Length: 372
Image (cartoon, rainbow, N blue to C red; front, side, top):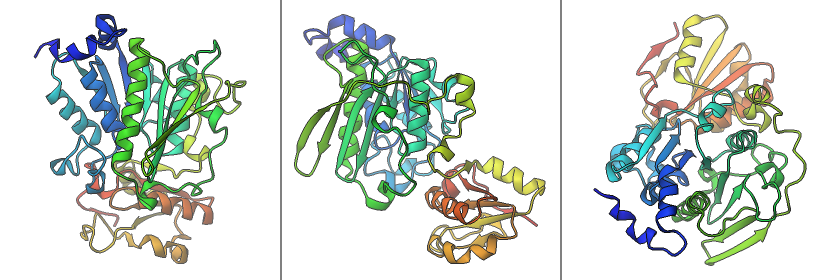
């Protein structure tokens, strides 16, 4: 395969060989290989971006397939980051380098992960990650393509980049100085999402970085583009100029690494299966494991002696946790366990309560483990 697949792109007036050369030298990190990240990755690779990083600690689930277009039924249960990289490397073997990070970003390693790249595309679906990625990009002076979707509408903008007015580019905290309260904005698990919508928004995010890094056209820096799929409307809002530096953005890399974005955004603390197994094996604290799966969801025990409780019953069963110092909660995919962690954290603010990332669908989940 030669570079002939870029002929139609190079033929664009104002793009040409120089624009294609710039893309080949570009390095972009995509945070989240989900509904936004999948189409963005596809088009960034197809356009000729030379290096892509893919960060995602989740695994493919059946409910992902209507919108996460890099995956199919054979990918269910496998790492999103790894399967996305495999698909792209298969389809674009000529000159594309992919870095795979099959884990979630944390404040301890986000700066080191983002630093080698020219720009970041945020395809995450939670506020803790959005604020963390934004703050890291501000500290490292990296442009950030942001997208978000809700049911049948979405928006996209380019943050932390020159806005055409000679002023510092807007960042996420200029738009949303404070995270919304936990549970005040439902997610697609609760409300649903039109499958095509993240495809549109993710592709627009990719377009912003292709334009920025190739020097072709006008970006959305200083503007917010809205799309409503139900009435076929696009409209653009001019954003106010960036204000003073927000006090919630860490002043140094050291301060950033010490920031707990999950707590700052009211999100639930999460641990890996490896960490959960260490806690259960060490027995240094009274520990309770909670299995939120319904009977039709892989009914075999993963952690023997764990409490089997449905999410809808957890409010009235809080007495079952009063003697435990540490509570480990898991479900099939890691979502319900996060909700339960928040609910129990409000009832028992002094306890160590954790959601296990990825649930039993994660490749690291044990086949069976006894606490006794």
